[in-house]
Image (cartoon, rainbow, N blue to C red):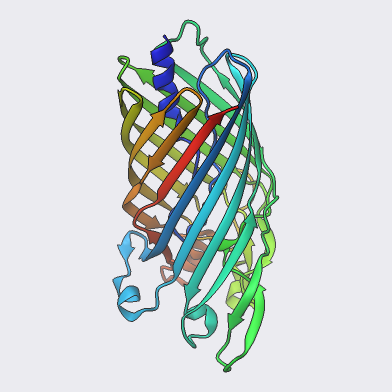
Length: 355
């Protein structure tokens, strides 16, 4: 039983984060899943993620000319998630997650096409408090189990972070909110739903799966998208003059094989920012889309510490139509769809300490 529970824990260690790889501004807000344990106590998880997004897509069509012409947007995104998990008993646990964000973005169009310049942001993101329960008794469900989670995301991150933008006038700068993709927070109080599961065929081989959804009832946060300037009449008409507070979701599934204290896993990961929210309105500026990735990972587990490295790499990237795109298409009769920049891969590395 002990070996099976250890294998279950390894399946679930890497299920911490949602972080879409690009301008589809999905921040790392997925859940923490702990192994079934009757030992009360604390665990501390530190998880780091980095990616560089630079490839533009409209739908699934890559806009290769953007790179060729040097007009593409380049985002460098780093995030550290700090999570403290309290095991209450064999079935219940609580977790508190606080992300720290460090973003940098370079472009031409945001700076009057006067040259490639950068804006950035740094600070805490939106914190989250979650409760989890194993649905089957771990004392008897040795091979597999399902964990449900429910939480609240708090608007602790700055959703109106500002930096200086260059203009067409030489040596002239204007202060304004940075792009939505590098805002540390989204300004909304959200509800999170999670499902984590595993099944072990043997002490070495098993499968895992998870689902995470963040519902943000708030429609817009009031942050301007005009970068310190004045929004256009078209932006005001279709409500893209202010930033949206979107939902997001992630699902993962894969297989895992254990060799002594090392676990090697591989699976499929889907991250998405939908164009329509589950609760509340869907207006405001957003770049909806999804990424399908292959996700190899390796985990080392010792008695009181574990290390995990995962490198999801994109198989499919799709920038879908937003609410404003659909409304503009209906009004003009001309199909409208914006673009977004995506990364090729994401690097995730973390460690968990039993306190």
